[in-house]
Image (tube, rainbow over all chains, first blue to last red; front, side):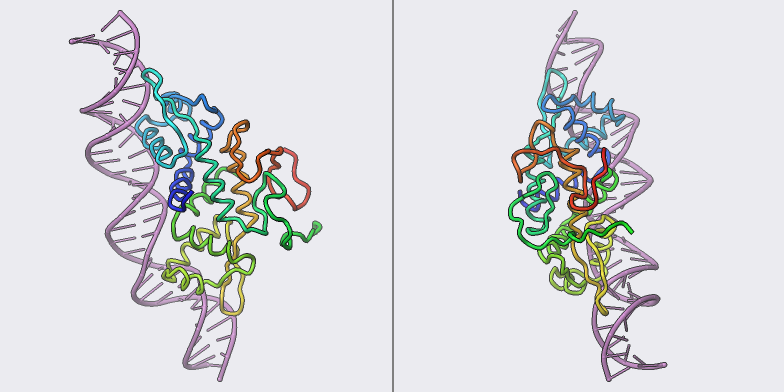
Length: 121
Length: 121
DNA sequence: TCGATATTTCCAAGTTCGTAGAAATAATCT
DNA sequence: AGATTATTTCTACGAACTTGGAAATATCGA
């Protein structure tokens, strides 16, 4: 993922309503949710929701498909994967671990900065 | 990390100049870089740089320390860790993998890996 | 085709962000 | 103390963002 694209994705998630929308869709999984259902669930005006959905679409974080009259939105996990990958690759030190999910990311041999076990005072 | 804090951190990184600053500091490692050096390296006006540094500080993504007349800024890897943890936990499907570093997600602990014993959820 | 439903587009506020010149503050050196 | 260096704070302004009412568009059912 390029920096330009990462900035768009970060900006898309850096907004309360949009982050709520995205988290809702993530929890919903691949099935997704209709725009109307999202609007009702989060209590957002239709026009406002549509605006935010487009921002998330443009950021490559959600996908859209039509089911009859409804437009179903779902999280784009590949897109989110790309963002997390960008962050871990560009914004986390190589030696200094920044990946919380797995203990041994790539190379673990540099010194450990937060190693001192300061006992609680 | 709470959602409110995550939004602040995401917003801090969702800006070209600030992302440049942060990536520079990450590459620089724990030694960090003086404000003046950052301004020169990125060609940003001092007042503008100061504004962005405060945003990053407020987001908990960088740290500040004084060395003589200079203020040295360095990346806060723990803070970045918290952000990545929030994203993987809240914005990535459980079944659908979204962690690119390691293929097998291992019961992600909440935060603060090497610190004291982690709190139970 | 007509009416009903689901969303988007258009538009007009009000709000927040990004920028940088000038002045102020902090620390050091002679 | 006075001069010098390093950053921040104050300030202002244009740009970008957020919101939602009203109208337009798209699809479906009768």
